[in-house]
Image (tube, rainbow, N blue to C red):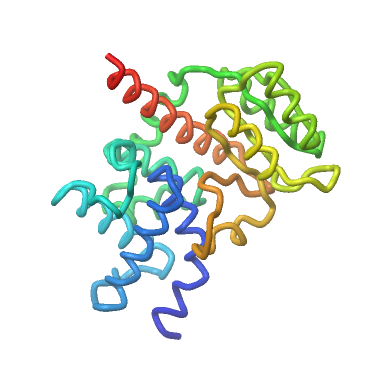
Length: 266
């Protein structure tokens, strides 16, 4: 099997990870495309690791080196340059996303990040403490399956957030957002009445800006890199640690954006 064939099945997952790390679809997809160009130009640079581990290691090394050597380049990550750079700074955030979202073991994350497993475990503890200190917000859940909605509510409230409403349809979601403006929206892609969670979120965003996470049973279909796709995705069935990590990352970016907006207005 060629190198291209061995890494191809992992590309949708890498795109999802890249978008989560950089906070933007265009930024993440551009970064993945650049890494693939580097690998294609010099396959010998690919690490001597199993394909999935080597792909992630190559991605993180390339992305981190680009920031450190010359800083964010206009056009590569657009308007998300500042927040993307901030997201890359803590190694703990990278380790936590690798383990909690991508499902790598601590040992595998250690090989990807080229550090000891003990250091990885220390970073995971630090990241968990960071999440516990995160500012709480109110959340609108748009989900037509009651058990999934209740499970999300339990996880979010365990993190200190409050759930302002659970909506099952497009119409219910718009009404709930009007009654109480949420600080975060978590929406399923497909809703009970046949409507789209994407459409509901787009209608909400026409009224005000709010960070959004989508829930889907088919994340690979929304990480093709061929057109506009969601940035933040929670795959079904979801793991509690993955929900915590993704929500934390989304709110991290939102906090960074608010701080920059406040600095500009002063």
